[in-house]
Amino acid sequence: MDHKPKQIGLILIGNELLNGSRQDKHMSKAIELLKARGLALNWVRIIGDTHDQLVNTFKQTFADNHLVFSFGGIGATPDDLTRACAAEAAGVALTQHPEAKALIEKQFGETAYPHRIIMSYLPENARIIPNPINNIPGFSIQDHHFVPGFPDMAWPMIEWVLDTQYSELFNLHPAAELRWDIFGVPESALLDTMNELLKEFPGINLSSLPSTEKRGKLIDFGLTGPAPKIKKAGRWLEQQLDKMQINFHRKN
Image (cartoon, rainbow, N blue to C red; front, side):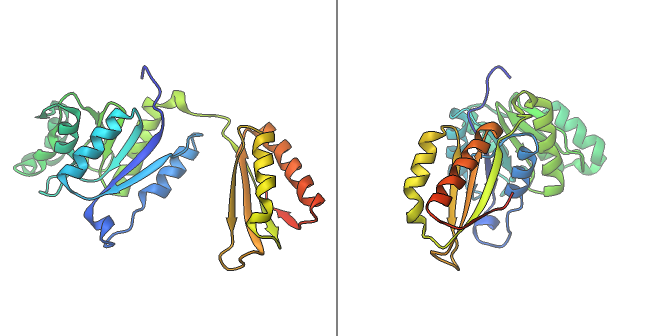
């Protein structure tokens, strides 16, 4: 690559995700695969198998210069619109990819025709993503990578893309995290402390999650950031809580 994508996103495609007949499994796995490489997920979109929505979504994300993994819709059935819509959004033709054609013919022989071979038609100049399960490839355009909706196929294909094309983005020293349970106070009692912490330690991110069951009595509080800085921020936070005589328990 001659540039670095601004953010990392997922596009999850399928009417079945929107009507509740199938639950998504890809987001949690993608977070796991990215985290193992010191990377983080920035956004997720779930969209149906609808031509206009697919084209408009891809046009926007192509323009945004993001690293995107798109799941689903690259099969051969009439509702599999992703290949054609990605081509339209990129402003290129949908053409038969010689390598994809050869892979599908090698895998299925005569039974590749007349239906499976449809999956060899990809956006012009697309790059192949190998499929270790059945050799029907995914494809890449720019920093967008299109894989099947089946987890056993999609997940190793994502790993292959990350490891072969984006290793220079890997952070071998990812952000550290500290977490506390804070007892007996509402979140509002800590707002000034939170603001002061962020001002005192730029580059640190915080999360404050009040319990829905023990409202006003328990907060799951976390800090993330560079390891040396987060240790100092953690000590500072605990000193402030001690001064306010607030009970807390550090969880890691």
